[in-house]
Length: 138
Image (tube, rainbow, N blue to C red; front, side, top):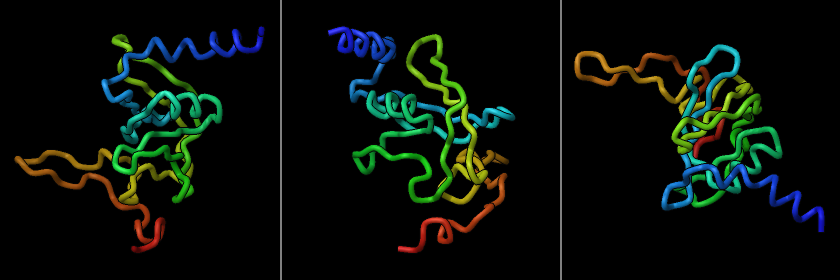
């Protein structure tokens, strides 16, 4: 009986989050060492719980309709160092160690690699590794 009570208490922190109507919350991955913003993805309760339990980022893929462990196909895992909840309780910040130095599926360090210059989005960061070399070509 004590075990089930302890499990409920441990998951209470999930109920403090303001989930969207779809049961999701945006999660920002930030480099724990230098503060660079690496990416944004969505999490549901299961992915957030697994992230905390496993110590590595697990997200919810809206396009695939399933959980995905960051780096499961690329090898570029995100090791969890800290987790924060914003003041409105509707955004998660994951402070991570980015394995392999690449967070973006385009082969760049960050998904935020485009900069607005004279009304045009231009690439401001180089491709570190060809995505075909990371994921293979389809």
